Length: 251
Image 1: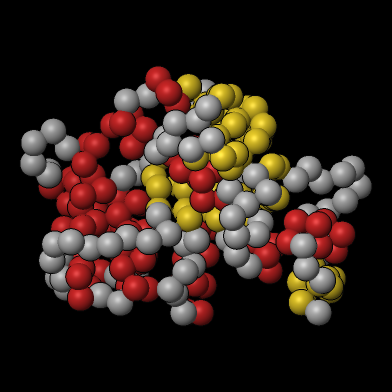
Image 2 (image 1 turned 180 degrees about the vertical axis):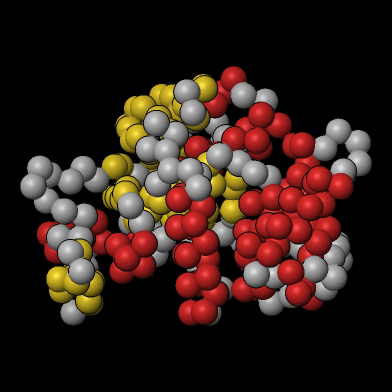
């Protein structure tokens, strides 16, 4: 297992956000986290990334207790893509992507670090923007830069909080196919997604959160079954069979 979460509990200022969450994420898979706004999806991702301290439970990353890992050790194992990123300095795109090599650099970036950053920009398709100031980019362009920065870390697990936000259809397709390429190469990708149709079309595994708790799918049910989705999202919808899964339609 790439990630092993057991009996996880977390809250802000006494308010419960996640309750008794237990889940396992297999290596080399694209895993989608789905649920309504406020169900704890982004919080769960931050906990797995080691950015928040949980009340109780445990999180293991590739067999290692996350609380025992130094920040630099976590950075070599986990790449985290936030939902939003606010630029403060007019660094070039190439310089921003190169900061993804921080956990590998002891003094100044080596030629190898620059080559890895260049390769990450090429993978994401932004090599033509390398000399543009990051502060002058659109929201979608910045998102692509941050994806390249995460890839430059060369992590074994990539956590993405709404990786398709701000992106047009062309770039959504580019990122989703890149995720497929990464998992085919053995990386584990866990992403918070809003659109269940996108999740069912591209992801291998699905995690549903409802009101801070894991929604367990009953034996014989499938993630795209209407009764499962109505329960998770609390809204009327229909599902239409499509390529062995289903398309979700609001009614």
